[in-house]
Length: 353
Image 1 (cartoon, one colour):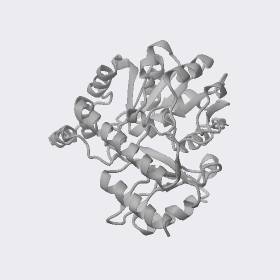
Image 2 (tube, helix red, strand yellow):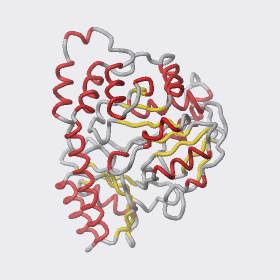
Image 3 (cartoon, one colour):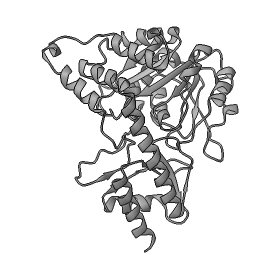
């Protein structure tokens, strides 16, 4: 520990991302990436953006991208914010709305970056246990002081709340921000964006990493009341006034324009998720109901750590968490048909021994 570190730096317990193995011929089902490539329209737009104008700064306001997103969701441009991946957008939301406050309500089993941001921005995290079905109970999220944050669908469980349930949380917390993290919403859920005009305390955060196959580009966005967006802009312009480069902005615009490709790949992921769930259940796994591009499962006999180790030995990587209550679960990303067939074949080999 360096003598030059600040006291805050010394106390931080950084987020640990999913492993990015360097091995070849690997079935990588551990980080919820989309198994399908980006839209050809996206790749064309990004190639065209690699030109002599790279010597110039990008549009600091990303006006074309914001207008494209606003048109897509039926909002005004002033209701849209963009940044380098949803993690950066979340960090700026913590700084804008939660910093230094007490009692931010969040699920105890959820995205593990939230507690890290609580450390970084001096926010008191109040972890609310999921119910016996590993789902969020809206009745547990009333009268927060700092605010409320949760993914929908939740990660790593994949369970989802309806819009009616989200409205319950919004109505119970009119004096603080309710942040709904919709990283996986396009794989079966209904976005809470349609509630924005009715609830000035609602902030919806999304990413192009998952459903639009752009994890390598780092593009995130937030949508909400103009006052919330103005708060995010104040933080962004006090930190990095040029967050999205020219290539990223061009690719993101094209991703929203090619709606047919987006819907096709989402449908394929959903189809593959259904097949994967059925195959795991056939092998005596309990699989939580998922509306994401992953499933959360545990076997009735074999420990999760043992299964994960056997899979890795045979070239298949999944995510195993050591957290209380879920240490016997595996999070398995939805893959291509070929990837999933290999996963099931390895599991069959192990479970029939």
